[in-house]
Length: 149
Image 1: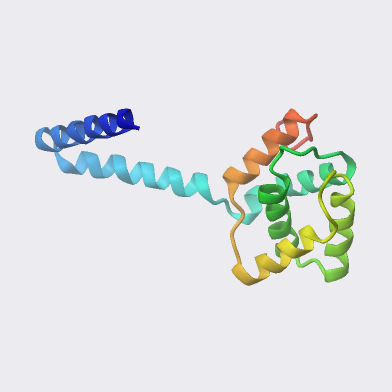
Image 2: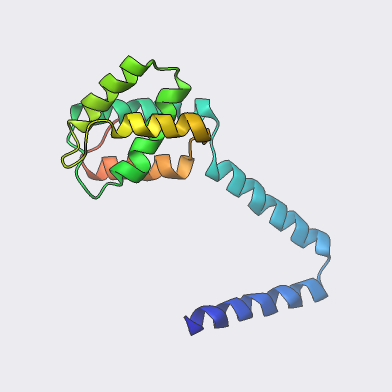
């Protein structure tokens, strides 16, 4: 833990030196670029990832999704956001839940339904980092075609 503080002090010292020796507008430009990158990287517009989520849903309906792939915390949440954003009816969500949960050993029917209820209340955005992580786990588990070309 002490090493982290040393690293942080070192970075802080470099930043102070930079500010003393350079035009602050350069730093503001760099920080602005970094913030823009993080905003783009963190949340995607619905249309940018809709196809990826659709492929993940299709893959999950047809393949066993083993434990250790962040099924409950990430996968079910992102599928619930997708289902809600697509205006699925309660019956459609229950059918989707049944199809996917049957391929997730150890998980219980109704978990995706519960996530959709949570999504309706909290209105989260699709998180592109979560989606990318899920796609990597799916690729590692055998893969789904999600637009790699």
